[in-house]
Length: 245
Ligand SMILES: [Zn+2]
Image 1 (cartoon, rainbow, N blue to C red):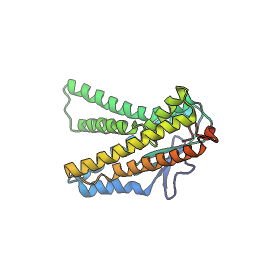
Image 2: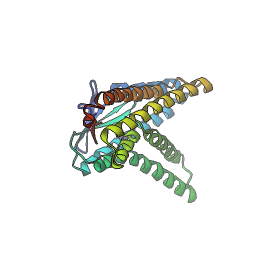
Image 3: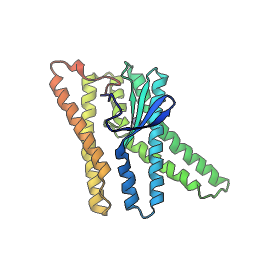
Image 4: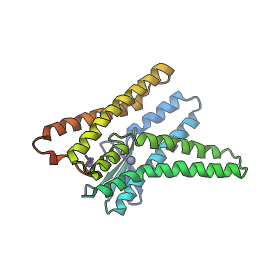
């Protein structure tokens, strides 16, 4: 379901391309954790900065794709688990919704490929400057953002893409949402197990963000499944359609 406000406590930081920008105060947490755990604090914070700028550009991908279909974006909010573009709740076709959804990850593809191609080109012509390392870092981080975002579970775009593809394939709204919710439950368990395994086997720091996202995915999927069970025999047409999740 589409949220209707940027979230309580979100702080307005400005307006860009006609879209209000907000940050959730909890965004400070990953920065504080990186600052306190990384021996090279400046480098860690710079990596985090690249992640959040990439997330912001990703959200603008959704927003501008929406604009191309006549769907306005009220605001973009950056939080500790990523970004949210708040698009107006307007009727849209499955294809339009798929385009709006795919445009976000497409930005990460462009950043990943663009930085990789540029870096390769610079190396081939004999360039060897320290700043070139940042091209490699940006490409690497966008590759991981892309992979993570394509996990086929809401609230990641992969879940919306799977939902749209099932609708395009002729599945009912009820069936499409049911399949995505079951896949999301499996993905949540997998993500949680992966985080715990990493933590226990490599003695790495506690993977709090991975576990929080796994929990968020699990709770959302369980709520959708219980809603779908309620309407299964009485009103399956009440299952949300494109742009309503
Ligand atoms: Zn997205």
